Length: 147
Image (cartoon, rainbow, N blue to C red):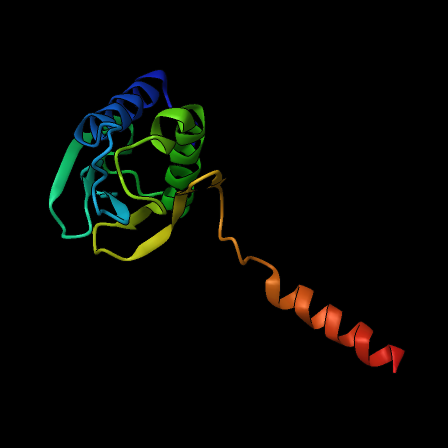
């Protein structure tokens, strides 16, 4: 799903509103995650803090009634690209590090991590442990062969 210009602008405004709620200052908030909940049916995107208090919301018209099987993968990719473009803003929120942005469906099931900020380390992308099992299995096989 390729985002329209309007979708990109809506996501940018959404991210800026989150940044306004957590301005960079000396008194950092104790939030550890920002939950971004997206509804495939209504196209609504809502940000919540750890206590499930709403931070901001918007409706992405392009996502309303989108029944694609890979809807959330497309949303995740689109949000990651937008967050990458605004990484300086997002990495400097007035939130005690480490913190992350987590994508959820409308049933509060976690789809993936969109952005992780931890002091000088910023990680943007898919599951950090993806492929670890196969790497460890290969490593172990090679170790056993050498003995």
